[in-house]
Image (cartoon, rainbow, N blue to C red):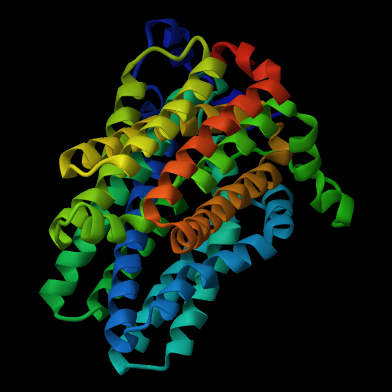
Amino acid sequence: MSSSKQNSTPLEAKVGQHDPFAALRFRDYRLFTIGRVLLFTGSQMQTVAIGWELYERTSSAMVLGGVGLAQVLPMIALTLITGHVADKSDRKRTTLFSIMLLALCSLALAVVSYSQGAIVLVYTCLFLTGVARAFLKPASDALMWQLIPVSIFTNAATWNSTSFQLATVIGPALGGFAIAAFGRATGVYVLATMAALLCFALTAVIKEQKTTFSKEPISLKALSAGAKFVWQNQLILAAITLDMFAVLLGGAVALLPIFAKDILHVGPIELGYLQAAPSIGALIMAVALAHLPPLRQAGPALLWSVVGFGVVTIIFGLSRWFWLSLLMLALSGALDSISVVIRHTLVQIRTPDYLRGRVAAINSVFISASNELGGFESGLTAALFGPIISVVGGGIGTILVVVATAMIWPEIRKLGALHEYE
């Protein structure tokens, strides 16, 4: 039996009145969320520092391209193992181990930066960072949903999205300011280390959770149980597939430098605004969803939000006016936030506790693969057909994916209020 039931309090009786801060009223969830904001913010600062330093040292786009690849490869390769570990072992302990490894990687990057060490050492740190994230994602996701009752999963999903988007907006700005203040990237890695250690401390004081661990011995069958569960639960498969292809086809972020310089004819400051716009839109929408009553027609809302994402992507691709492009990017983030909240809630309420880690690992790979491959797809089609056709074609493809999803999995069109599922 999931420990979330043991967290039940009179707060659940107020669900009909809708408390926008319901999830945050639980001490352990608050500690967990604050820790995540610190960790994500430090990670975003570090990402800016790595890109800035590597390009300063090498002037190579290929070296920059290797940054994401070095981190995503271990996440994909370790998917089945990390999911099994999250379901077989103490999730809090695995989370703490992963956070500490991230802190050590950031500290190592600071040393390499200070000593102007070989680029291969930077990639080694990034690879180990990917390993840490591969274990952190399923373990921390599974742990997080144990800290609150099922009745407020949707509210928690909105705050999860809010915390991530907040870090995405604040982190890069702080990273840029820190590089300017310190005159080099080394100090940013030290700040990222401190943020990870603070996250470690906040997570460490979370109370131990009673968990139904998987009793299966390690085997191919046990490792693949998460994938099997997703395949057999068509609503979850539909939601994950829809999100993956929407990001894969509809992402325009990778091409923003081209649009800023060659199409909108704006400078680096405006490029910064364009890059921040999706996260700002997502942050505003996440806060709005937390204050609004739970969606009563989650399925149609999911489908229409992804259609909207495709439409605003098309408009962005055709726009020649900076402010219109900025607005479309903000709307794309807001619409994506709706689909993220619905997908996360659906996955969690329909996944038994003993499988949460493995399902979270599968979900993580879908997200990681779509982000990395989406950037590659955008770059490849832009090289072959130009950036405008790449973005507009991706938006059209996203809409077609929604139509195909609604036809292949018609039950998703009938999906009602998620908070009523027990």
